[in-house]
Length: 313
Image (cartoon, rainbow, N blue to C red):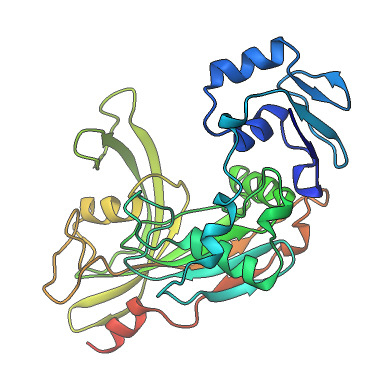
């Protein structure tokens, strides 16, 4: 038997999720059987899997030791040295807005490549804001993600409440995301179409009408900021947020992004597409949200690879 006292980062977490984090090697079927057999207790009493934990709760797990995460696993991230330096756009006690350069993954791909979330966790460990040894189930997490070949702003949550509330902001469409890209054609206006993903090729196709039940509607707003030497610097505003939406939508409009080998116009001097998530704008966040102080605030990159490439034309 192992026991754990819930911290503030466990407050509000579903008991099943808490146990899954602590026992990653345990099959879910066995975990839920443990709930039924009263092998998981809170404050000495049986609780359902959907029980929401409160800070200070004593959770007892009468589960074999081999199912628990090894004690050394939590500190591996902080001890590792990273080539990529973390660039912070904004930081407070709840969240981080960080810059992800082209080529860096947001999450691990199991090939031991550097990735943004590991770099963020190491930064918080080293600053003392996140102490994995004192946490039961929470790990700092990214609230949004962008493609490996896209640069720009990514939001990370430092605590569980901030993670849950930021996810709520995104789900309720209270966060506007704007991108910059370079194309060989100027595009202006709001455009709507349908996007369908091919699971086999991992590509999407944009069509004027839905082609099957899995087709999803998309709307993107484009505004050409500058035109130079037959190239256009375009600001893109996502109204809907679908996989590869901007890249595929521009290609459909005959304005593929420069450097985009999958949808746009390949370029010998570029390894990836000239696309940057350069600005996030918060709308009216409800007062009961821990991040309500972000209402009306806007954060953007002062410079980017996309902008500098365009200016050098």
